[in-house]
Image 1: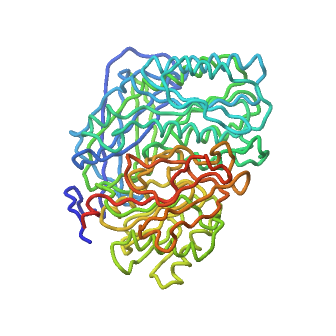
Image 2: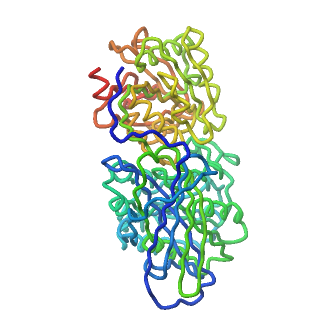
Image 3: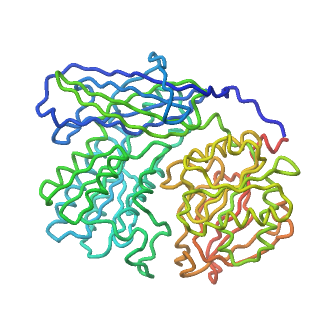
Length: 593
């Protein structure tokens, strides 16, 4: 199969990296209490412009000793950004600073996920919490932003997606009540990030018109977490039953360190009240994400603290720059930032790992299988035939070299599934290999010798954007891609869109469907049925049907693209709507071959 030309693709330079020196200055009168000033780099991000140019952006939040955001334009902010294509040891070299676009954040467009835990509150205290939450909402929405709401209890629940409807948000805040249940705090933070990822507007991450447009299009995002307790039920370690089934995803503190939207780490602003909070965990969460942590002895002044944090969304300094187009793929980024005001200076440094697509157009054949095979109530013969048929269809050659990759973010859930599929295919004579996903994700070097990559996470969404970008590149070069697992239609925390490969739009992870709870063999079961058509993936399997007792993502086919080859509905509910389980997609250029 021939490969389409890529006018922006250039060879990687093995010893190349970059430094960008940026400057934004303004004169103003001295400010009191500057000894407590903090400077933090946030939302470091990259994208590829419409003409193939790689652009990079970073926001800098400066706060005074009271924790209030220093308005953009007060004092002088200097930012040095170092980029390495060769790992954290560099080397690091300068880039022309004439391409820098420095600006103040446009106050219209911040997205705040409000995550509220009041499991340890008393009735008199919740009124203060509600007042602070309402003031936070009012502050963000007045500045043109949006707010979502997640309530934390024994199970966490999204009460509202991102919205500017203050009336609806106020009503949901008013409905908050005191509970003495357990606390799925980390689940709540993860759900907050999912609302931010779901609110990404078309073109913000995937299509930009140069560095200046990238700056103006990038929304400020963050999670404002309040708690007066401590995490104890995000993995159902205290309670799980029919009343509290969870959402099918166990979340740890370490998982939250990876939360991002479009590859940009999500700042988490944690506020804890009382002596029951886990200050060490909340502080680490804020520090790792580029946010802030405030520990309060009591509820006095809580409403002021919550509103102050909401104000951060309109007070940051912003820097964007074009960088050489060959600096795409896996990047290590180190940001040094310095705020100067009169004779006072505060400085800091942050280091992140980012992944930028390299002119990828997702042009190879792709199959998506929303199943963990060993959880299916079917035979090994059926599984082997489905795997072989799928590999044959996505492959650009008759005798493909196949790589099976187990996502390292599997949390041990049904983690032998990928190995089992590899062994079944290898036993039939295919040239197949198996590997565990590298810590920093797949690279093109990992997949270069293979015609087909079967990427699997048996029980969780994929989390490494580096792996997703590599699969995009493989597809663009004509290779076959299979994405498999019952949570594979979205990324962890909605961090990046998976639709360019799957052609699916995720709705939820399917732990409840048609009024039936279905997860980990508990509750109901899905009935999965393959179509009866003549597609090669269905060869010898037409009309096959089997039961499945785990959650299956609820998703819809994007823009009528692709084809659904298998559907699921709830067993025993014939009127329940079907949802896609196996889908295939042939991009236009591949179809023309």
